[in-house]
Structure formats: C-alpha cells, structure tokens
Amino acid sequence: MTPLIDVVFLLIVFFVLVSRIVDEDRPRLDLPAPVPAATLISPPGAKIIVSIVADGSAAWRYHMPGADIPADAAGADALAHIVAESLQRDPEAAVQVRAGQDTPWEVVAPVLEAARVAGRAASIPHPVRVQLATTRNQGA
Image (tube, rainbow, N blue to C red; front, side):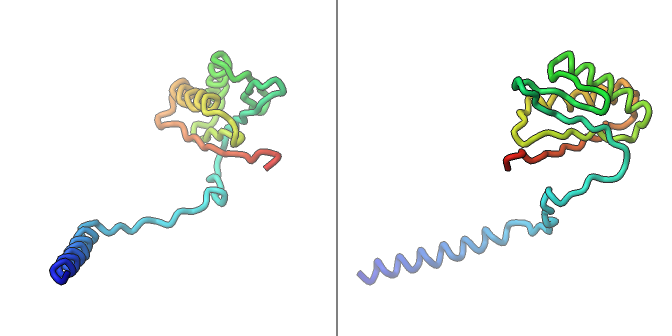
C-alpha cells in the first residue's frame, strides 16, 4: 500500500510542476477592457441613414429620407444609386444601417454591398464607412 501512495504523490507533484511550466509559457497580453455596445455613441459627421423595416405583408423594405425601396435585387441597385448620389455630395459621410434584432442577415447584406458599390460609383478614394445599429423590438 505504501508504494502505491508514493506513486500517487509523485504523480501529483509531476502534474503540479508541469502545469506551472505550461502557464508560464503563455505570453502576457494587456488587452483593453470591452465597452458595452449599448453605450457607444456614433462618431460625429454626416450620415446616410438606411432603415430596414418590415411592412405588414412580411416583406422587407429599405427606408431612407425621401425613398422607400423594396428589399429585393432591384431595390438594392436603386439603393446603391441613391447612396452614390449622397456620397458624391459628401464623400466623408458614413452609411448607417438601422435594423431590428430580428432582421435576417439576408436583408442586411445587400445594403453593405450597395454601400461598397456606391463608393466605387462615387469615385471615393477610401472605403465607405458603414455603421450597424440594432434597434430593440417594441415588445422587448
């Protein structure tokens, strides 16, 4: 019985030493503390606001001041054209996409592509800045 206890203690000592060596091999990183996203305020500057809303018939629409576009392929092309016109007036403007938490990604992704296409159409030398904003559901 005594040799068995000795072996167990040797194994415990071995694993304690090995675990300390493994911990010391990791590099120490000084990472910034995360800020809750709800407290972030969008930076100042001009914004092109695109709201994604659901109409009563379970279809999605892209809504901008002065435009209400269906969320389909033709609507994405029209959205790119409108955003390109706005970017030609103010090349530093950011495209802010506002959508509800339950909005599917398949509806949001064309807006991002439209912003990229609009930046090329407006001949902007830098990538278009895009801000994503999530709105809470009314029942939440």
